[in-house]
Length: 491
Image 1 (tube, helix red, strand yellow):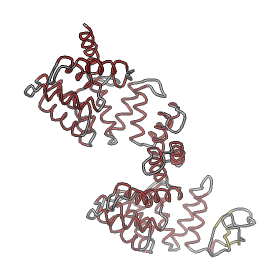
Image 2 (cartoon, rainbow, N blue to C red; image 1 turned 45 degrees about the horizontal axis):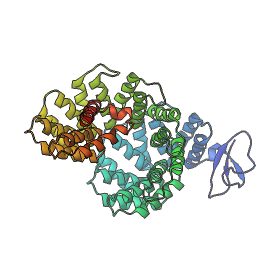
Image 3 (cartoon, rainbow, N blue to C red; image 1 turned 180 degrees about the horizontal axis):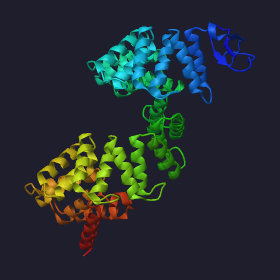
Image 4 (cartoon, one colour; image 1 turned 90 degrees about the horizontal axis):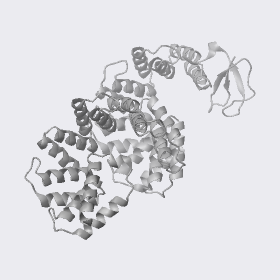
């Protein structure tokens, strides 16, 4: 038995053996409808009913959308295309989906403009066509589609199929956001947060993030959560941040899973629970997220929340790297360089360091310099260190200081070495502090100052340095040298 709501503003459709007492959506009376009198759009509404059930009946939904499309409904034809694209109730057939979307566009479906645009943008069932995708998004946007406006804004942001224009992107996002499109509200807030295409405006950024959260956007939850976690522009509220991350994660946001995992790992806004953190990382990794894979790899490398396992660490780092994570590339390269969890392969390690450095990973840039130095390529090593130093990588001050102190590939310059060590020490670099103590104790590049050397050395030795710091390149050797210097000053 097919029935529908008598309220013309509701128009809910359902099907069952008996007629319910009232519409479950609005509470109004229901009436029975015969199959032969249903219009194409009404068959589409019935199809949506079957998709919204728990669990959904995808085959019945597909059958309804077929009936709808057969009666000339653009709405139903578009939904039939979606079934073909995503394999809902049938085997996926992207090419058939594209054909159906084109038919739906001809029938006047604005939603089909967006769906077809996505296919052209991503090469789903058809060759990629950036300009064609942007044109479809523009058509949908001009018809008032909030989704089309957001998708067009994305093209303008990235210069995809159109000339890049951040200001126009903001205009379209604002239009979509005012219609209540939550993803557009989050994107608009990001523009205000970072001042892209518009003036930076902290109040508008927070306001639009809050609107997106109220509308249930998981990305907005992650962004507002980060503001609360860091206290940026809002009162610091780590517990509130965790709750937002948890909501986003439970909605399937992999970013929410990673951020929630980070808080659980570090005990930020919630009691530390490394095992639960790893569980969230694993869930995100299984969803194919590269940052979740990296975090899972790091957990295995450090033995946090799981038993330490270099082989599994390398596995997850490599998968993360293959998906484009700069951090994953750097850490996988580290294991390759040291032969931990994988066969030692310095050449392959340098390839991954270079790829990560090209993505802007400053740690990879520095690490590449370290191994180039070990291989005797001092000029390229120094170039890496200089670039890393320009990015405020504190270890680069130590490596450059060594080169100038010892005349490695450069003319010896003790004063410059001392200055580098001093600046690195100000940034908290342990190796630089060790070298600075030796310079002060022995008058290397500066006047001898035993009292200051003793003070700095004693303060460092009194610290309990974590293994991650001691495992940094050269750190253990520098600490041993510091002990020798301190003993010499006692004598």
